[in-house]
Structure formats: C-alpha cells, structure tokens
Image (cartoon, rainbow, N blue to C red; front, side, top):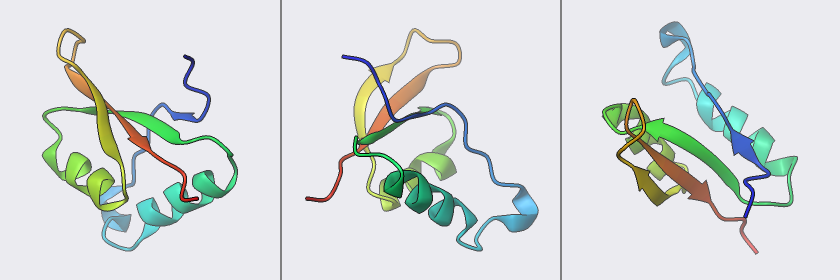
Length: 79
C-alpha cells in the first residue's frame, strides 16, 4: 500500500507560527487530494505531534528503528 498523499516535510518559520499558517497549508493540501494525507513526525517533536493531532491526524504506525525515530500519521478524508 503506497502512500500517495504523503507530506515529506512541513515546517513553518517560528516567526509565523501560531498564525494558522500550518493549518492553512494542511487545509489546502487536503483539498488537492482524494486520498488521506499521511506524514512523518519525529517522535521527540511533541509540539508538532500535538499540532497534527489537533488537525485530525492519528498515528498509523510507530517507526522506532528509524533515525531519528518517527511516527507515521494519517488524516482520513471526511465523508
């Protein structure tokens, strides 16, 4: 099963954080695909993981052997 709507890296400059930039980027990507969005988040990056969970992402799998360790997250499409 290939990840066809995969976000490899998503960073928002600290000067622009907490201004809905990340939310708007995810919203726009979600509009442009028919498939669920998937991404990886470094496990140690707790603020990013909390952000993605607020955006509706759930952990699909833990990749503890990756360097650095990361979680693969998925945001299902609303039907």
